[in-house]
Image (cartoon, rainbow, N blue to C red; front, side):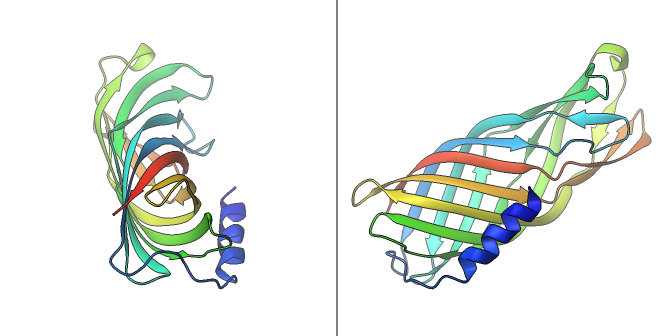
Length: 198
């Protein structure tokens, strides 16, 4: 899936049409985002998907180039053993800043691609089942992010947005202070939202 996202990003980058947005334009978005970690991300445990409300702001530097900032309320993920037994949970926030290139293929459809930096912080780790009472901790993570998405113009101010991101999120898991290895979460992050143009 990561290869597919990168291939689509490269394909759109070869297109060259002007965006409908001008320098200084802001778009604010609110919607739902799902963080879906890759499978087999640790020899002992896996992290399940989690969804949350997202907040997103885009500032246009000119007609095509923009800065995108992704924020959200905390995502909650169950932590399970390889046999599916739930052994804990964690909350995380993955704020991401990206540089985007916006295209215009019609009067209402505006695709874009982006590359950026992600910082993920984990907190409120809890244990359950066979690990209940143990101390679980997950390190923070820095990594790259790739993005592809599109806006559909509903009227002069409102847009419907869909996008997908791949994020490089790796964390070291510790149980009672002892490392149980790196967890390569590397999720696909996809969402739908409504945007308002300022």
